[in-house]
Length: 200
Image (cartoon, rainbow, N blue to C red; front, side):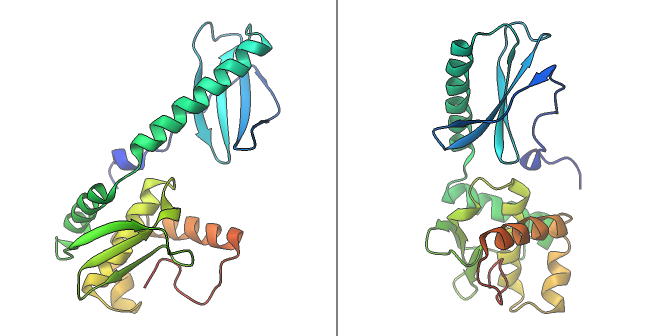
């Protein structure tokens, strides 16, 4: 698939001159501070797996380090909040995905976040054209959210999870990657099995 700004891989890896053990900041985030003698003034941070990496100049004092870690955590949280899709954004994205992969044939009437879906990622009511996504997807990689949207859009065209359904969904080139990601989350959370976890 061509480069898609909605599916970026994140910042490049840096080669710090020294690393530190992860710090626990109020139990909310694992933070790893990496000091670099090449870094003169700038401080930067990014998310990496289950932690936040903060890059600082080697000369900073412990007090400055603590202050900058707090500043960068707040900055990242604000950026992530701005990036969250609201319901109108979800509907627009669903329409774009339908155009790109299903020739625009799947036409959702509404797409919204819900907080009452803890054992599935999404659901739809084909007769009404409504799609609901679990709030648990918020903060997951965008290609995963796109996959769940496409899964539910496909149900507007094909009921059930038969061969026709999967043939339609396989048009999305990140299907296997997204399914693997979600299966890993399901396994980690030990959610009840026996149901298609993406939805119905």
